[in-house]
Image 1 (cartoon, helix red, strand yellow):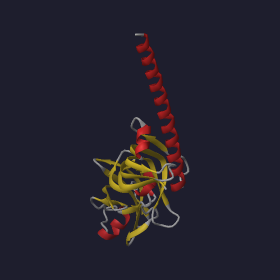
Image 2 (cartoon, helix red, strand yellow; image 1 turned 180 degrees about the vertical axis):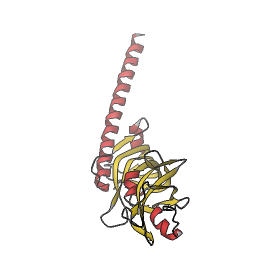
Image 3 (tube, one colour; image 1 turned 60 degrees about the vertical axis):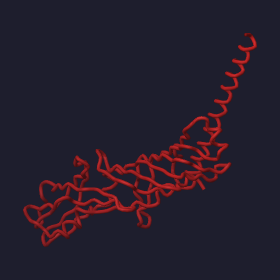
Length: 245
């Protein structure tokens, strides 16, 4: 019995040491991948990297990680216009099947899915904020975006008719979609300005707008978009996504 108790103690101690070593190793790996991702993407802050699954060391031996979660608080995405970016908030991606080199200098996920958001204030920068003529004597511009309910964006349009600014903005509900790397906002119906109805093409030049979002981390792509409470909620996906290297 004494020998059995000693054996059990040894097993428990060794098991505890293995768990400790495993957790130290995974913490080191998370830090290495986070640093590489920050350098590769030119991030202002270090992203959060969480390697899931236990034990980690057996995954290392196989050269592949089952599940890695990456979080980037703020990401300045390219817009396709030189020098201009758009801020993506709370980008969170779940990477599956991550193959990596021994020194973590390269790491690639076979697939990735995730979420992110763009505030209405950030998206508003894309719309025409300067008054633009929609017909003789009528100018208009978008002055606000907000949640319109049921997945719609409420677009506030300010108008001036024959030199007099209308006392209240005109509101239209718009549908937001994604096509490739571009988010599009399209008015469901056209407003009139003080009872004056302009040509559709001229009105849509104000109410409808789009924003290209390019060069997301690791090559992930836009998948779906929907209007939310505080901004546009985005789903992203990708394959052969680079975390490092």
